[in-house]
Image 1 (cartoon, rainbow over the protein chains, first blue to last red):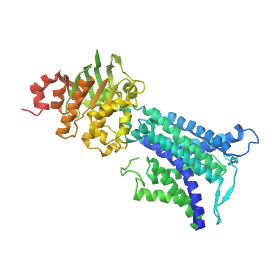
Image 2: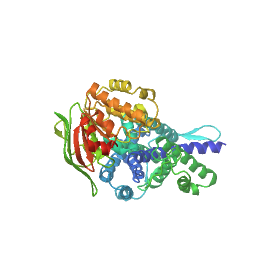
Image 3: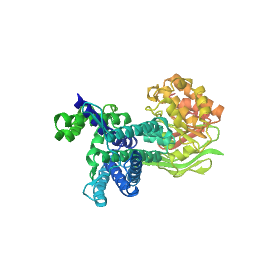
Length: 301
Length: 238
């Protein structure tokens, strides 16, 4: 039982990171009907922006603290958002009216470009993510531990998701974004500045991935330019599981995926951990292609 | 001055010429109709006017050419489109749909609260359904919502695309009564596109008949109603 609680805590922490990344996939899909395969690299950019900010922008001898962590997170969010809008403006916007397959191939191209461009710029060998958070294990009794990283992950993801919820459901931007996800053409005709809304969507989605990058670096402090690949794919799977295009679905899918991965690693074998996500993907596509909260509509890609 | 002047408007979809040089005008304060069969180019005309598809020719709004202007900027100037197929967002609530009525109009001094109340006076049924998802509304209510949303932006020119499409006759009558009312009471200039020629001609000051991308006939609404060709082809009379 205690094992189970411990696995659940760990799974929720992992799921929260996936959720932040999955939200970006699902938001971009909502407005452009595009799987932004470069999103994993935007997440990677967050981890590296955080790393370089912590290494060079903070005065030497800065002690790890919550304040430092928040600053690093904000820097990472900015770094990722900048990369996200550059990709949107130069890679996707010129193809707005092109057949969908062209944009899909472009997305994969951008992803590869950033992975290997990242190796050129950041170096191919892994780097240690600096300790920005004082690490402490809190004993909850009965061999169950909650560490400060996990608390930070929970709190930060929660706050970011509440802000996102507000933006999407209570503001004119959010209404416009959801209108575009129903019909870009109608949204355009009734006066929504479609390009601006898509631009802001990329900023928000990318910034969330940037925050996730730092949380990931804090939890698994060895980062390299290919680090976006697997978490990116998994977050994408989480978004599909929840119903791509559906914001609540992305969070549910991510939490379920994080939990199942941790349970599989804990009770069966960590060897199967990474395979699980893909098994889930295949099952979802076979049994319920719309995902948990998705529409029944079948999307041709 | 005419609110809208269209000259030699032409639109191609690939190799298909959907509009082959159409000219007409909409004087301020009037209801002008474009009638014609399916595929005559009516919706294309409206899309070209609101900047939603590439076109050749000139469109002048308030005497200013709109060439190359994006849709949201035209909406900002008061050229507001209530699109075909009820163009509402089923995944948003009725209220959220209405709130989007001012999305392009932030530069104009549009009084959302007052316009919202006015719309509820015109369409009391919308007020009852304010928190419902728009997709759960009946066809007629969705059309009301599309018109109400357009009115909330205080249009200088209202483009109405087939408001009667797929609606029961009583609802069609209600919608057309409303169009007349907003024209009379609020002095809204209307460009109406309709397949339902009879109803459209009855309420129009002036009308044009569009046939395979060209204007084949024009005249006062009442004159066209009595025109033998129009009667035979569009009104189903013999």
